[in-house]
Image 1 (cartoon, rainbow, N blue to C red):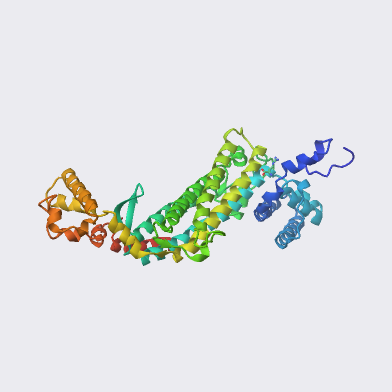
Image 2 (tube, rainbow, N blue to C red):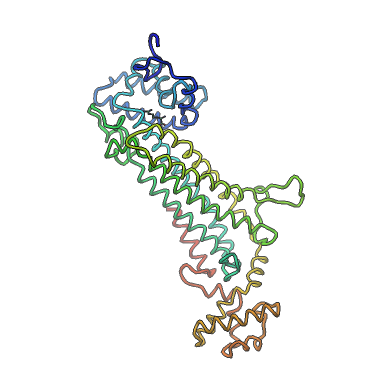
Length: 462
Ligand code: ARG
């Protein structure tokens, strides 16, 4: 190549980069999302190298002013991104040099894009995790309102999707709350572990300048600098860990979505979703489709996929940095967008879910849901549990034949199955008696639901 090469690393090259290769290797179309984090990292790095005498006070001031201007250009949409400058880091650095001249060229002293990008992603993800956790809290708050409203609402609890035992709807909703509580804590663990700073690792081996990594780390809000430079530039397990936590959280949302889809069908008719979360059909005028839960259920698939992408991306990489790692960003960003969007949609929708209390109660009544209560009743009267199970099985078969619920059988009818059965059996066979009896920590009784809602409200406020 003739004369001076304009590429930032072009010194040793004597051929221009193939035009297609330039586009193929560029990441600026997606990594520009890291711009704010990149500028924050550069400001801290500049302050540190000024402290150790690499930059004069004037040069530092020029860099700070230049980066500030770049930030407003980016925010205002006037910044010109160029594929030829490959990535967010070189786009910003080139613009800085264009704005302030030679001082801009000194910014990269004692730094490499390898430690720079690893730092940027951590800064970016740290803030995004805080958003995800706030999104979880918002959904939890909505679920608690609904659970409190439906603390006394009786519905069938299911196993194998067959009616099992009566539960309160509030209790069922609190099960969702618990899944989200663990997600919230998982994201917290992830944020804690990722909060170590790669800067100073440079390309992989560290740098010969007398850098002060503690200074940079504390400026950037990191708990400490990464202990090993080779690990610092090559590791992306914080991104994998985030995607794993996101995949679990999306799996939870998908399970909730599945229940909402089932429950809003004409066959169940347990809940009504607000119209603004549903759409109609262009051909069938009667339809009201639960689009939002369906989409959230569907979107859990791509988040699981992104987790597998990142694991596969990492699995054969030798230490230290490899360009493969540029592929970490799109799965990570899409995971964030998908998770935050899904949480937001559910948080808005949850408090507006309307329970069809009569239908829920009727479904529990029709499903012989209190059969276990009858068995427990017989056990309390001295029958061994297995015998009680057998006797109640007979009673259920009889009731099915009579097309009646257990509570609708007469005392004499019930006594055919065991003579210990008395008038007091009807307290046990009632749905309210059944759920009210499960009045222990973690149980389904309305009183317990109210206690749990109260405790949960306190938990999410802390
Ligand atoms: N765009 C690159 C990435 O996302 C930045 C680091 C590039 N480092 C390098 N030595 N080519 O990973």
